[in-house]
Structure formats: structure tokens, C-alpha cells
Image (cartoon, rainbow over all chains, first blue to last red; front, side, top):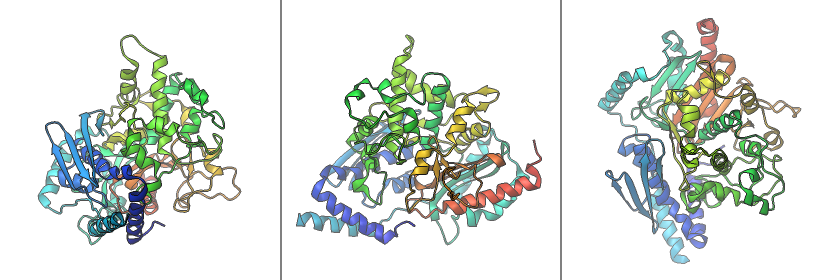
Length: 96
Length: 410
């Protein structure tokens, strides 16, 4: 049995409160997971932009992001942190 | 602190109405473009279609496959693709409106099972042994006080005893896997795993850990330093190994395997493939390691891969999980031989069912007795995909085919 959606939101809220008090660096997960999964979705899975944005977003969205198609690079800022992911080549895909 | 709590409340409230959903456009033109793309590229898929074998799946798809872009349950489970092979012929194939057979899908933790095959290949080449201790590859490990020697087999069976918490959205604070994939430990995931405390003696307790597979990929990398060839650097040999040893011999052309910043494959999570390319892996297992007459993996390694390992049998399953047993990084329906009560994960499914499973509902089910491989890719961020219902429906279809005509076809 999985926790319900509302329970998950409450859990997430409490987690956030705890995180704020003890581990500021952990909040980088929000922009980091967004840029990594968005990059892989666009350049490896080759799905469309809207699908990829929806997929990469977590409960808390990033404040803003920048996609440079020429450099195949995504930069995002959220919760006071910035993260970058970029595409390397067809075999090795994207990384942070 | 009060300001931070208020900040958290505002963020959480803001998030209440933004629970993410996979985009499922109903636009007919998008669908027709995708259909055209599938049609144009179907020659890339080597598996012939068995038209007379698909009737059961077509009547069941709304109920069983969660492929419901036009129904009231729109988006449920967010299935992206379903691809089913039986006796080397395609009996069902369908994609959602944003995907096609040309997309290399993320397979998440199903990568672990392919990573195990890669290790099996290295063992087959006599470059590695199941009983090798990690010290053989990491001499500096001798300084670390372990409760016992961790072997390659321990890492394959998630029984190194190293502390690990594998949770995602439900409990991110305690999660080692989130830190490993997205924060500073992503620089060198194997090293991060190695630096965990060892809670149990190796081989005693099963504890599912993405870190262990990434440590295994780090060990694989170290194994190339021993067999240095002048014409190619150890790193270059390692980075081309999945293709040279497995993908190219199987004619798999769509694979991407991402690395961490230390250029070690993220064996736990980051392999991508098209449907029919992953089906080739499933077929290789059905064919017991043989592909077009060439042996790629030893039969013995595969046999051991699909046996319930004692560590998984000794460990009480999580109350959220079915009672799977676990082999060499494959989930199994085989009951544990030592247990008096023959509990298995799925009571209605055969004992020899082999599964590769991943985050967001990724599934590859191999049914050796029905010579079938069933693949499901999805983006089930809300965890609503009912894997058991899906597997039962697939099994019924495969069984119907077997009993009607396909069982006779050679």
C-alpha cells in the first residue's frame, strides 16, 4: 500500500521543514534533478519539450531555467541553488 | 527558524496544485505523426509481427495496460510503451501519443539487471570472478575495517552489508540514492557507496541499494587497469565495453548509458533503450546466453542469476513490497527453497518468472516457459501503476496464445 497523495504532500512538507533546519545543501536536489532529467529526456529519450518539462518537475518547481540548445545545456535555479546539466554524446548522454 | 518554516509552508502550499502529470496531448495530428514515424521505422525492429497472436491483448488493453489516453482515466500510470514478444515474434506493441519505437526510453533500475549481464560477460571472459574480493581491485580497502570481505557476488545480490537507504519522493531526507544521483556524491557514486558504514557481514542481509550496482561498475572499471592494451587506454576500453561486449553483438543500436563525473557507468539507473532493443536482451536470456550461434554469456552464470539468493530469502521483505526473491540483480518469483511456506511475489504467475524492475513502473518480465518477453515503459510519478494486474493480464494473453496456436509454431 502506497501513501496517499495528500499524505505524501504532508510528509514532503515536514521533510522540507527539517531540511531547512539541518541540511541546506540538500535543497539543491530540486534544481539538480530538474536539469539532469530534463536534459536526458530531451537529448537521450528525444521526447518533446512539454513532456520533458512535466516529467522533470518535482512537487516544488524550479524558479527559472535556461536551455541552451547550441551547447545542449540546461541551467536551473531553485531554493537558492543553481545546477547545470549538459549533453555529451549519443552513448554517454547527459550528466550534471 | 520561524521564517524558514513560513517559507516552507508557502512553498508546500504552492506545490499543492502543481502535482506533475505526464503530458498526454489528445491532438490527433500528433498521434498521426507518431504512427507515421513508427510505420516508417518498423524495418529497424527485427522481430516479425504475429498478427493472429494479438487478439487477446487488443481486447484487454484498456483494462490491463493503462493505455487510456482517451478515457476517463487519462494519464493513469502514464504508460509510454508496451512491447510483447513471444517465440521471437511480436504479439503486441503500443505507444502513447508522445512516444514511438524511435524513442530510447529511460529504464531506471532495470539498468541493474543489464549491469549484471555485463559483469557476467566479464566473468565469461575470465577477467573477473564472482568470489573476487573488492580488495583485489581497491588495494586501499585493506585499511578499512569491514566485517568481512565483500565480493562481486555480494554486490550482485545486494548483500554487501553496507548501509543504504533507497527511498525517493516519499522520504528524501534519509535517501542515500537521491544524494548519490543529484548532489556532491554524484561526482563518484562508487566511492560514496564504499564510504558507507558496514552494518552486517557480507552475504547475510539483502538490502536493495543503487549504490552497490554503481560500486560494481567502479570495480568493473578497475578490472580494465589489469588488462591494459597499448592501443587503447583502460578508460577507453571500459567506456566502450557495454557496446563491444553486449550491445553490438546483439545489434542493439539505441543504447545510451550515462556516467557519473568520474566516468563510471551509472549502472543503477541511467541506461536508455528502444523497446525492441531491450527485447533483444530478454530474448538473449530466453536463448540461455546464445545469440545467432555465438555464446555471449555462460549458461551457468545465467542459471545462478535466476536462483533465489539466500540473502534475499533470509531478509523479511518490506511491507510495501511483494515477497520477491532476488538473484544476480534480477527480481524473481521463485519461492525460497529454505522456507517451509512457499510464498512467492505473485501467486498466479509461474515460479520461473524473471523480472527487471525500475522506478515509475518500468518493467521487463521474462516468461521462460512461454518463451516470452513483455516490456512496459512508463512515467508513473504518482505510483498508481498496478504491476501485478498488468503481469496477470500479460500472462493470460501469453497463455492463450500458447494454448491456441503459438505453442505449435517453431
